[in-house]
Amino acid sequence: MLETADLGKKVSEKEFKPRAKELRSRLSALQQPIKQKKLPVLILLEGWDAAGKGKLISNLILNFDPRGYRTVTFVQPTELEKREPVLWRYWNIIPKKGQIVILDRSWYMDVSTARIDENLNSSLITRRMDDINIFERQLTDAGYLILKFFIHIDRREQKKRFEKLVKDKNTAWRVTEQDWKHNRQYEKYYRAFDEMLGYTNTVNAPWHVISGMDFHAAVLDTFRITEEKITGALRHTPPKESSQPSAIQPGPYHLLPAPKLSEIPLDKTLGKKEYHHELKKQQTLLGELHEKLYRKKVPVIIAYEGWDAAGKGGDIRRLAKALDPRGYQVVPIAAPTPEEAARHYLWRFWTNLPRDGHIAVFDRTWYGRVMVERIEGFCTENDWQRAYREINEFERQLHDWGAVIIKFWLQIDQDEQLRRFQDRQNTLSKQWKITEEDWRNRSKWEQYEICVNEMLKYTSTDFAPWHVIPSQDKKYGRILTLKTISEAIEDRFRQKTGRHF
Image (cartoon, rainbow, N blue to C red; front, side):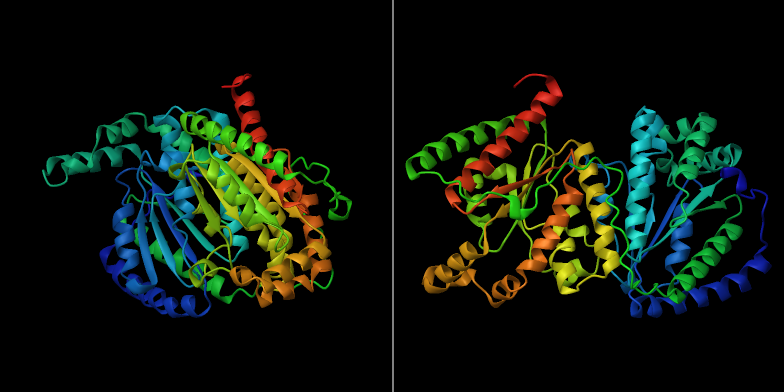
């Protein structure tokens, strides 16, 4: 794709001024419509060292009110950032609805210069580029506009700019040995950039390759494309929901057979004496495994879903007692805050992922998209149908990162739920646990059961299977969840080494 840039293009000062003035006026007029239509915009600039990305960004942001945009510069990840999934730090900065985020470098640094500088193999680069295409598609499907610019210059021009910077003691620091390496091996990096551009040039997020040889031409091209694309996005009217339900597409993943909730036996119980014996045993084992997880830097993500009053809180408390408090976090998920609702629904889960060697326990999860949000009409039919694939993609990326993913559905019947609701209502110390919303959800039991059965059917994958836990007897359910967690962690150790640690 790099050959598409017209490196000989030039714009005179006389021609530049009136055209730039007109484009600045148009760009400035777009900020209010962006806010009113709640359009989130991501503008990213990639390109060669010394191609002029910084100057282009400086000129671009002058067209906008500072309250409606922010700029983010990405450099090599810190040691702490390296302990998260590669895309984690980029999910953290996605804009809210009606806001603009402008990036100086982006997720593409992990598949271009890093490919050579860190000697990354082709299969890893391909997987990262696949993940990038998924990331961008998920954002654009949710209404984001992504503008991608690559600023291209030739080898001679890059060397000339480096030499000019080095001559001035105030700018010499900007040219590093790594920069000179990039220039010496220009052809090698050219091929890496070109492959990256071709692989990630998608319909939903296409690349715009801009010549950086002449700054005036680069400014006008960047301004023009930005104005045209934002104007087009503002005029775009989302298609109306089809009266015919579209087929759910969970993605190209191996799905495991999942039982329906009605098929789960709920008659299993555990005596008090056996329960306490097993509880102590399982908590001791989990404590030991937690130490090994930290030493081996294996992240664990435990997702709890289930009927109201099924025992999620009690399960999590028994689990937490076994763990070192410095190495885990419990993430309670309720209705999204305004800050969360203004972004992609997966944002609040990406931003709460654990570092490697740590455990994150989610009390309610991303599956709210295909349950409560679906039933209550908080998202469109297209949104929740698309979510099965997005969730499988999310969990696959976590698995590829190295995470152990353990998902629980705690199952009880309606009579047991009613008994627990009444107990909460009649016990002063438990009354805070029961709300009008709980009773309202109970009245929609049949709707929820349909949604849960579909959730189990389309998202129980070989890398993130569901575990349906009979919790009619709380003691039995608690021990089974603890055992399941231990077994999943031990299984990961065996997969990595062929033996127990």
